[in-house]
Length: 125
Length: 210
Image: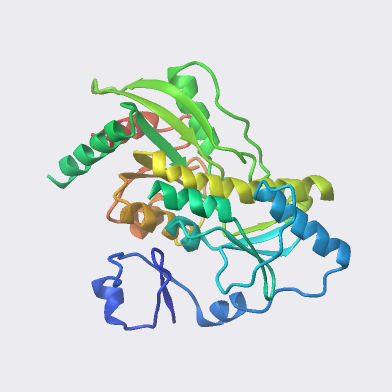
């Protein structure tokens, strides 16, 4: 059964040394996830949305980011928030707590990134 | 010794940020009773409430600040701080849950969007808090991904934590379960709604911020 480090997101199997000694990042708290649940959490996004729903979904995310003009979506591999359909969100708290760039996954291969927010964080650092 | 160093570090952090006041944040999953607790604290010491509460989750969708809350414990400790009430942190926000609770679709979708934004804001505010009170619903399983992730990340940031097991007035509540889940933290059981055990809470708060 996998154990998720709640600080850096690394997964460890049962009996791993790290679960007893602590993760390589220094954290000692792990969230235990049943294998079948981990599998279902990685299932593909819902794709059978209508054009209106897809537009609504994009408008919602851009609204959340405080942008008026829709930008060209950019393809990446990591997301902090999945938007399954308008009004249905899944949030990856580890990404958010870690201060990772705010990336919304709208569909497979379709992402929106809050670039201004990312640069303001870099400036702060 | 460790607590003293942590407190010294936090004082220095506040000075570097150009402010001397202590900031205490209320964090936790939705409907755990964060705003009910914020209201109780404000009512006890300022005489006015902080926000509205609702049986529908994600009623608080914006971070709220109450400045200069001054408390005095029964043992004579005084504490002045700015209180931050944050939106509930969740891993899933679904407008259909709000519709089941009676909201029309458009309002439910709007609430879901604002709640998502609220989670992002709440986590961003962690940069500005000195101490966190994690409010957990004592009738629920404490081993949730939200609880473990919040507490694990606060530990990683060296932010002092006080855990509140709320709703102890309910039969299903088990403070024992909360204590067993987070044995390395101070845990106080209260009922924010009925004001049960608030003195113990204020004492524990004064202690954790020392």
